[in-house]
Image 1 (cartoon, rainbow, N blue to C red):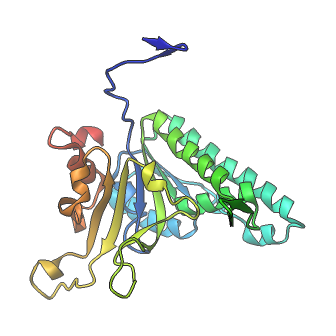
Image 2: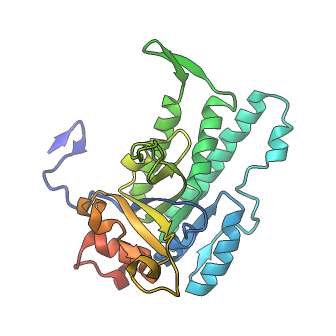
Image 3: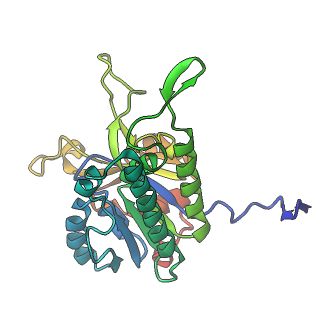
Length: 281
């Protein structure tokens, strides 16, 4: 049935889209490493210099084909040059062009028939740059319901549109994020008991990615001690799983440990026993 030239159907199968994974965790927990366990060729969009050292080490270990910039600085912000720009308008214009440059690279990778997985690392940096491109480096304040607040509506909508656009290519996309304390879950002293993603102004990322995962380490890990409390070092927790919400509970926290922490095992847990990991890879 058509409405205004758009075909509608009661059969929504196949419209859920591919996995858009929001991945967060503290430093040195494997955020750069995890996407390398996915289908190749892997298109990597490094927005921080530190990603390159991990990529060089892990792509050799996994034997994966990973495409990344030949010039490591090509997608980074030249901070010294930006600081030397004459005024706010020139800086804002730079970020407009740089954000578009990153977007164009991501879309070109998604359109390439050989690339099956695309990673933006860190997506946090991209979100901050997007805010600079729209609002400039000086905060913009507006009055909302009688209160003076920073204007971020246009920034957030632009990021929502970008994340939504990634699904149309049918490929797995991993958005690596920084982390910060989650003050919705606190102890008696008001300290956060867990972390959440940090994407600058884009706090609603979890509502637009269909799978949100956290990588963490075990503070009690000790190879010399016996018992489940000490035997594992790294783990993956599921915060949101649109296709399998039960994993958001105890069953998925943690879901995977140590050598099991990989994209095939993660997708297997979400999809169920009918999922063919070898075919997916």
